[in-house]
Image (tube, rainbow, N blue to C red; front, side, top):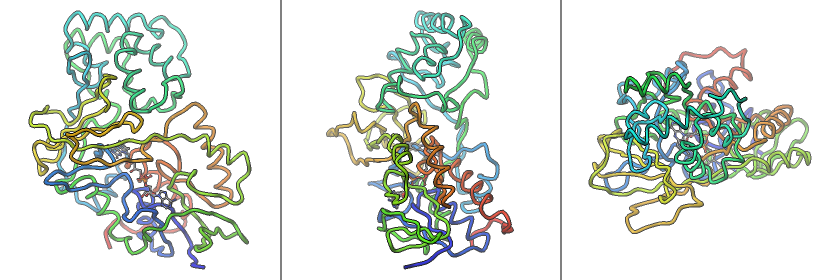
Length: 414
Ligand SMILES: Cc1cc2nc3c(=O)[nH]c(=O)nc-3n(C[C@H](O)[C@H](O)[C@H](O)COP(=O)(O)OP(=O)(O)OC[C@H]3O[C@@H](n4cnc5c(N)ncnc54)[C@H](O)[C@@H]3O)c2cc1C
């Protein structure tokens, strides 16, 4: 049996950030178990015939946490990034307008603009009705049926792969929130109000390679601690030690992998049911070569006749990548290959789906496991729609809560 203070399950950005925080504090008694033959999880990039393809889908660095920028830039200096003001488009009824729709209705032809404005004017919010607790009802309440049916319902059906009626509203921070006055003001003055982008108003992207360049810089100092091709399968508890795969024992386990991939010998039926309640979707990222494309970084495409939901123009944020490189994100339920696909990658675990009941289910799992010194971390460990910056932030919070007494050394690559 190999014995450690901490065993970390998974070596995506969550596991590696936690490992790096331990190492920086002078704690070296840890191992990361990784199922795949390489580290990185969703933050991986492939170099294909001159294209830099982020195989986990569109990845951009942007955070509201200054400490996360400090952490990232201590590993990969800011000078190694380009900064971009986000340009993203929305394709709606044969028109392309800037995202988000609420700020940019004025870019539509006047007849359509009027229909969409009426949709907002007649919505439940304008009529003083209380906010519904289901996503589809909420969208209709907030934007009205015309915008819901033309954009929000089809787009969310495409990306999530489940009916919007099954979704909760606890992830609405990802969605722009403009009130009626702001929407009307934007139309009247033909100008989008500033500061209304929910995330990525501007973003950093590495000057070399793809998003994996960020991951690699953080992972490099801990790479000797990563055990590849080692899926965690079974977790048991014996004499207050946690035993993984009958091979690794630890006082603390940090879990960043989907809970459903693990067998917990000690889990109660209620916890097993809660784990079974956690749903995820799968996204295929496919590379294409298209000679002409937009000046935008990416475009949202809610049209149900198209299989994909988002398209990215790589050269516009990675000028070192070939000019004609475009990639699509498609829910795996809608995916089928075609002759113009240069390369594709299936991400089995892409988004935790914010279904009704998810929050209560993951709370039960986290609290039960925490009592046994097993801590969930990151997109899968906490089963939340976290971006990589939030995974790093959550790693910092968890690290502090577990090792508060340990003085943190200045950030720096050893
Ligand atoms: C389409 C898309 C777009 C995104 N856009 C952005 C963006 O613009 N900006 C941003 O910051 N973030 C973005 N994200 C989110 C970001 O990818 C994640 O938040 C982050 O990479 C999650 O890291 P993680 O370590 O928690 O999980 P993962 O990256 O999924 O890593 C989990 C690791 O665990 C391993 N594993 C699985 N099962 C086992 C097992 N049984 N035993 C051992 N190892 C196992 C996996 O192989 C993997 O290496 C996006 C994600 C997607 C899908």
